Length: 425
Image 1: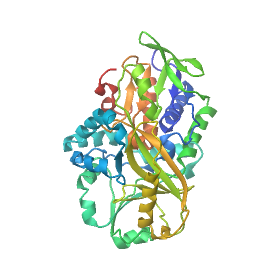
Image 2: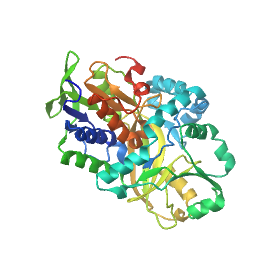
Image 3: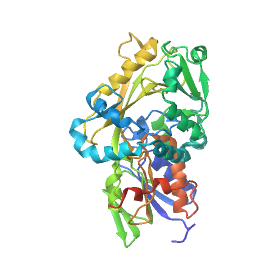
């Protein structure tokens, strides 16, 4: 069809990326059908349970120079920040090799950081505008994000990470112990130095936020089909329909935005994406006036501690395992134990944990999402694999997809996110 003509678009996935794609497409005048077996904003989605941070500074790749030396230790340490299930190690080896190679040199991680920055640089303002549009400005707060360190030497030990952030435009304010205590009086005196990224924001209820975006899209004409997408009917290179467990949906375009479950669908349209489930955990604990007032990341825990409407959310841990592997709830116990160290008011309190959650980050080995047309059909577009930055980059990804479907120049350079960087299926 000629560019600029309204199309029927099926968006597969109702997480933050799918929700933003659907809303942007409806805004552009397209007919939109959202397909997802789960409840929008429900616990099954990674965007429900993430760390709540909306950070322009999340440009530092998971894979960094020298990481390969730490892998044996990660395999042996059940309490470390990264765990690989032994039963999954053989299947994971090709992905892990690509992952380590992606961070092998400073040049490579700089390239990744620059690409991520194009998705994240205006993420707080985009989310702020979106929260206002859905009528819930209270769900997104721009109060800054705080990184807490035992001392300046611990901060300087992460010099490369902070250089990447500065290179991509992040600014921050350094806090000595007195300034840190003034901002967060409940923080343990173990932390003597802080870095405040004042442009950062956070969401106080990600599930309600995503559900509200979907609800707004539906109120403006989108349809919601509660079913699992199972494939595509492609004639030549043109899309004829999306197949679902509830039947085929005739359409002219489709967007694969179902997170960790996207790999099989991507292969059906010609793209073998090495997508793995990078499992994350969170625990929600009852907070009080002595708890953190703002989002904090203790450097020695690498976990996001974020005040939410439900309580203090402790998010973190990276566990590489199969989609159907049962949760290991000791990962939440590790988060809670560290929080007791970080906030003295939590020590000695019993039954402090209100909720436990485990979800699946959709992660590529090079740390970049897959955004753009599939190899087999230009009518099927990918929008998945965002790893740790899916929530923050949801709004701009939605705009990128809408630009492509509308036949307009894309608001961001698509080249770093091409599915073809991994080869054909």
